[in-house]
Image 1 (tube, rainbow, N blue to C red):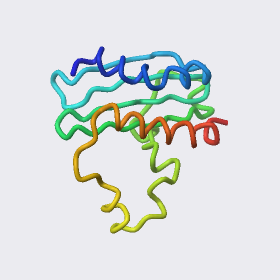
Image 2 (cartoon, rainbow, N blue to C red):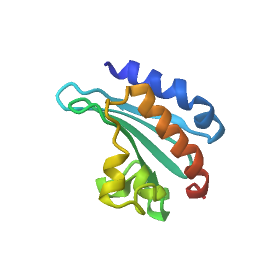
Image 3 (cartoon, one colour):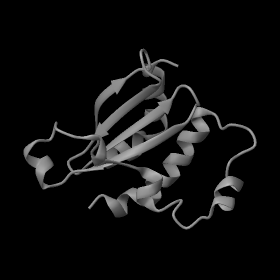
Image 4 (cartoon, rainbow, N blue to C red):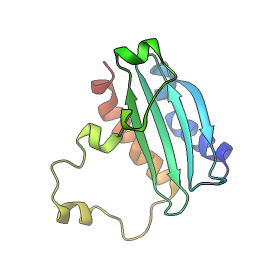
Length: 131
């Protein structure tokens, strides 16, 4: 999958959310030379990084909430500033290992299915986080 296709898939699912949230496209990187494709969108208060691990087919989203220091240096960021969306939203915090294992599908989800699951999580939780 090329980076253009991954970005197109993201935008086909999240376009209304991105527009209404004031997000703009910032950056995309393809897996050539690494195992990750990722696309970053930013707004005034938050940055979203959608990524696809090419090796295992995982698609997920990371969130970067801007702090006061970010306002003076918006382009400076470190890895620890990003948080996984499911962890930030508490989606997995209350589950024990057995519950987590039961939630793993027998058949791997397609890219579109994974993005649609993320959309539900984003729409349900991000408005509460993006203050």
